Length: 199
Image (cartoon, rainbow, N blue to C red; front, side, top):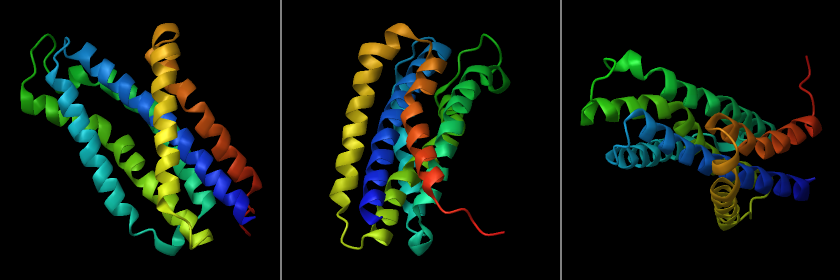
């Protein structure tokens, strides 16, 4: 049982890495489109991504003994739902924040990037350390290095998938949906084998 849990956690982490890298690359391209190729937008997005990831990681410390494999799976489902919503917000809320046709300044662009990235970025930052807490609840001797290796494998696979396939063959929205399919598969697999709560 515990060996299966170890495998499930590592597969979810790899799938999360694939999904997050593709989402980040799509978000950068979308912001470049929305702000007419303004390169400083890339720095703002990466700054916000790192900031929100750090906050999410800090919040994951509170999970403690409550962290479990089914909750990790539901957390993954949350990422799957938020990713396309993030893209839709970036694409369709710009004219709500800015006057149509105007050139946005540094601070308004920073605020817009932060607000549109915050749900996915926070949850993503929370997910990786939560995976480690979950693993250690099941296997106290579990090494954190294994989670981060799995995450790096996922990140690499996500970059390869986006660079050599998705960017050339599908739309940004389709790319995000395709990249989250492995995460959906592994999350559903965990939930299907989890004991049902008693009513």
